[in-house]
Length: 407
Image 1 (cartoon, helix red, strand yellow):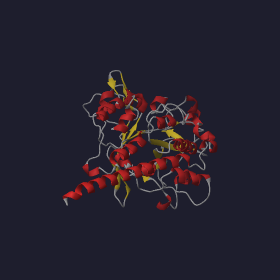
Image 2 (cartoon, rainbow, N blue to C red):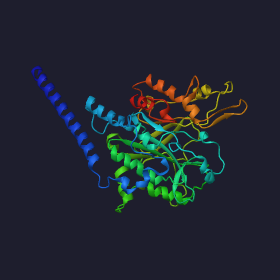
Image 3 (tube, helix red, strand yellow):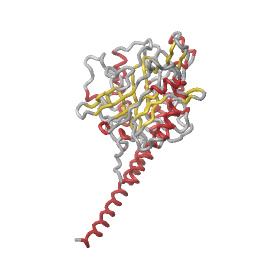
Image 4 (cartoon, helix red, strand yellow):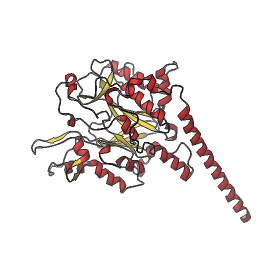
């Protein structure tokens, strides 16, 4: 028996090597197939206006820093551990995102649509276009929608602040499709939420429009159905692996279809149901079961209206230091975690103090903002899992996105 051990060990090594080579070959073939398989590859020609409308998407080119880090992570997993192509799971990855993604542009001329509202810095949470975010490594996007002026199309808001009257949800989605055509190994998570307090109505018609966009494709041979099949993960209540999600978008559904009668049947829907009717407003410990059968749960921190202890003096440092963050533990290791590292406009009239999103994210003077603190926090905790981190002004602190991806 002892004489057989070297032979068995050698055979095992050869078998592992062969499996690894096959896995790498599959990965390369999959990447090549995704890159060249394009019966409708020139999406820019199909929806030329979609990638520039309102400057939200801006140019698909521009600087590209670490947009392929997700792909690098998966291939590193394959090369170093011989893991199958479908690993790792998305819930086991640290993913940087942008809170209120569509707030990079606020203009005074839009007051004729919105009426008088506070200055732009009260609402603005980002300074880059979506294409630039993608190229910088952002992979999770928080889009807040409502009717555009005229109630004919769906656009983007932050409270009453309108992004642009001509920017539409459909066109922005085609922008994402165009980017994925050029980056077929990447995965995008798209959170959609109907924005309240916009001064527009949420009626049955807008919910029908949204359902038409985000329902599963039918058998009809239409461009819309082709786009759905090509670019959207069709599973409901499952956040799978990076491998099976390459070149795709996963819907994080924060809206509901409560005005539709009858409501859509579950088999028509895809994505994770994080419905607005179950999302605790201003909650710092939200638990949302998005798959009742498996018990899969999203643990969410979304306290944007931060309150201070009675003894605290209002200051930038005090508000930032009060923010809580929960990380996965042994009992929640296979659950989804989402943390919003952001804050709304805050004020304390008695102290004459106020703070807006950029001040909270970037800080002032010798007081570091949330983003710089997060950078140091993640640098000191490499190898730990934190899940999805939603940021304001992510690019104001160089290296933050890369640090989250590499944590």
